[in-house]
Every structure is written in structure tokens, then in C-alpha cells.
Image (cartoon, rainbow over all chains, first blue to last red; front, side, top):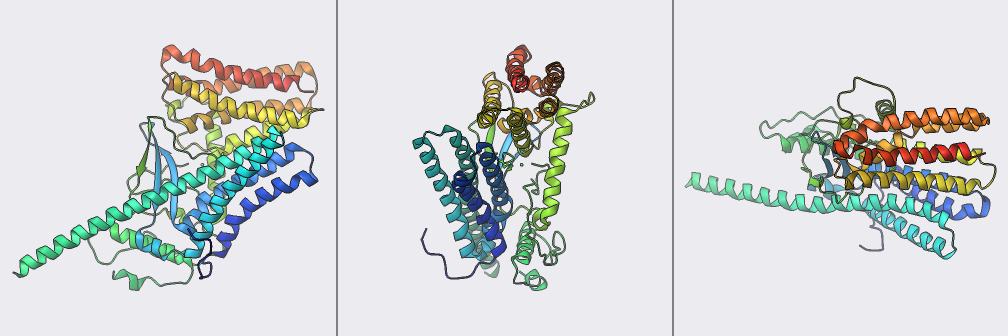
Length: 182
Length: 274
């Protein structure tokens, strides 16, 4: 992963904005609220609400639009829980805007790192209450990271499987046509 | 592919996604050269096309999901190491959901209606429901998130001192309690999905929420005790069918007793706050 964004423009500026907005709002509110509010309850509720909204937006909106990945859980009739990871096919994946996906992945990882730092701060300052907030926000970020990373791995596996299938079918059809000509 | 020419190319990604869906549908169908799209390409929309995460793939019946979902509604997401869960790699060429292009408001309405239907299913009396264990198939964690936060806020509001501690304690108690109760059922050899059980225990807090609200408004101790007893019984009654159907009948009491204990402790919190 490189540190510089690719040269093209954003293809989905509004989605990118919302993707970043809720994360930044949750972090900013948490950090700045100590200056304005003394009530832990308000800080907790607002921060966790923003983090929950961010989770929903990333999972349902920006994941689908910016990188073409989707993951979810369903329970089938036998009562078993199945995690599903889905991605677009390779052609469309290759067409996804590079800058969008750069932004998507970088902000995803950076938020988790930021929350880890804030958690360490709150431990150092002996404020276990705030660890609750950090814990909730961190688990939400990590959930999204894990989900989308698994999507990506599955995407690569599927692409390889598709490639091998396509190559096999091409080879067999070429052989067939070669034999029919002969 | 020939149908590429029939689909107009717009600069917006909206139509790109329509096109993608057409391509995928074309790859799924093996025969004819002209392929009808799954639905007509949607006109460019001003709103962000979003959807929640439905399970619509070509080989599975549509059911639905969660926020924060958490979320909470959110928080649902890490695959458990439970032996009954497995990650399945879905076919990348399955049909994309038709909800891909629905406007935001539709998604929000759908999520809200799912929360309401889950609530009705879990909490309200329905002697004719077929199999309580099967309910809450489409679990979500938004509902439990709202109920736990609401309970914490109500308790914190009613408290005259140490409001922050009350909120933190209530939230931690409920969240940790739900997780521990679920682990309890799993360790007893019960067949229950982790998030399903969390969702259930969260929804069963709804009567206690109402009780806490009433207690906040009326300060008489006798009324508080009566209200808390009634709502406590309601909560336990709501949780009973799901929990008992998940475990071996000989271990029913072992699974249900801690649930009852947790709700009793929350009830005491409500009564004792002044």
C-alpha cells in the first residue's frame, strides 16, 4: 500500500465524504468533548451512536460502492450461521476507481489505529469508563476491517478460480475446434 | 458481449453498477445471446444508492438481517469460532441485490420495520407461533443497542447523584450479561447462534425499559415495586421460549436461571435508584 493517493479524481465524492464523516465525527467528538462536556453519559451516547452509524454506512454503502465488496451473516433453515462474503466480478473490480478504494482502506485502518491510541491514553489516565467507549468503537471498526478483508481474500480466490475455469474452458473449446477442423 | 452495446454507458457509477449486474446476469445464464437485465436500468438518482445487507443470492431464499447493526445493530460481525458456524465463499457471479439502488430512505424504513417486527415477535404474546427457536432468524443488533442505551439513560436520569457511574454500570452490566448468558447456553451444549441470542436478550429488555420509564415518572416505592415485578415477569416470560428450546430439556433450568437473575438485578437497580 502506498502513502500517496492515485492521481485520478474521486468517482463517488458523496459516498467518500460520508465514509469519512462519521468516523471523523466520532473521533473528534470523543477527543474534543472533554473540553466542553463533563458528563460521561453524553460523550458515551453520542460517540457510540456516531460509531454505530459509521459501521452501518461502511458496511452497506461505501463498501459496496467504493470497493464492490459485501459481507453479511445469515441463518439458514437448519439453524446454522453462515457468513457470506461477496464481491463483484473481476472486470468490474478492475474498473473501480483506485482513489476511492485507496481512501476506503486507508481510513478504515487509520480509524482502528486511532481508537487503539485513545484506548491506551485512557488506560494511562486511569479512566476506565472511557475504555468502555473506546472498546465499543474499536470493536465496530475491527468488525468492518475483518469483514472486508475476508471479502478481499475471497475475491482473490474467486478470481483465481474463475481464471482457471475460463482458461480450462477456452483450452477445451480450442482443442475441440482444432480437432473438428482436422 | 453483445448486450454491452444495448446498455447505455453513463459516467455515473450508478449505471456502472447496473451494467455490472447485467454482466453478472449474462454470465450466469448460459444460453441466449441477448440477456434481459434483472430489472430495467434505474434512472440516475440524486441520493446515494444504498441498501442494508439483505441475503439475496440466486440460491438462497431472501431473508433478512443487521448496525450497526450495528452495527450493535451494529456490532455483529466477527465470525465465531463456534463449530456450528462456517464461512462460505459465495459465488461472485450470484445476482447482486436488487436493493443496490434503492434510496436511503427505503433502506432506513426497511431496517426500522425489521426492528419492529423482531420486537413484536419476541416480546408480545403470541400463543400460536410455530417454533420460537426459529424466530429471530433475521437477527439485528440495532434494537438491543437502542434498548440498552435507553435503559442506561433512564436509570441515569432518575439518579440524583453519580449519574455517569449509573449509566456506565448499567450499560456494562447489560452488555457483559448478555454475552455471558449466551456463553452459558453454548457451554451447556445448547444450539444457539451467538448473535441471535444477543439480539434476543436485548429485545427482551423492552418491558424493563417501559418499567424504568414509568418508575422515572412516578416516584412512589410501592408503585415502583409493582411495576418492576410485572415487567420483570414479562421479560422473563418473553425470553423463556427461545432459551428453553435451545438447550436439552434436562438443562432448561440451568439456562434460564441466569437470565432471570440478570433481569432481577436490573429490576433491583430500577427500584433502588432514587
